Length: 322
Ligand SMILES: [Zn+2]
Image: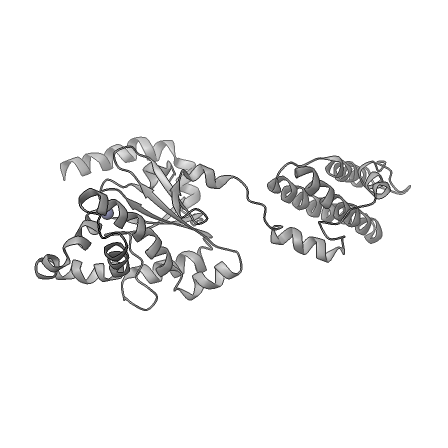
């Protein structure tokens, strides 16, 4: 306890002093981006392993990083999940298992647990699927190897459990929620992330590579709203030129502010974004600029014209990206 009290003093003197602004901001409310579900194990520290600061992770920790299925328990997990997604509008969830997990070892000796630790036994019923999947599908495994398999399968079982929550299902359907399965290796500090396509755990950075099987929904909506040609179709060369090489001309009675916005819009049109993110950023900038331009007196017709030019440009960008 002495160590903890010393720690409190040190925390106040150093961390609090150095992070005054952040703590002051956070006192007005939190806006964490990620719900992080991990084990209570003292060797797993979500903020430490992700190098995140106060206010960045919303954390649930319990023995075995378990998620009781919807309605299956009266514990705090369900309410915390609901609050994270509904109230805090968190759109990313990480379920993080770890090597040498004591809870997973417990699954290997449930009979003994039932007698010695009945509450732990009850809690581990939320990992019964994990136990069964491993005992029936990896019958030869034992010892440390079996623990590793239990840890890996358990992350997937808990992701399934998470999907039993109405709010989770609904947000997944809307494309507004991402769920990640991670395993943290205590001895190396390494984290591996579950890859659905290959059914293996891979370095998490490999999942940051942008996937482009379909248009981001916002772009799709934009294309529909401006009656642009479908993405895959060819845009006539002459029209392409007019879109990308339009002069920075302006109506006679235009204000300098509106002229500046026109130049910015034309610069955006001449740009060649090379990723989805950049296209999205361009579209956001365009919307903002057009809104500003309207306040500076740009006519509705001219704003509409810019919309058309952007909608012609998007397929060109997409083709350039390959
Ligand atoms: Zn654990």
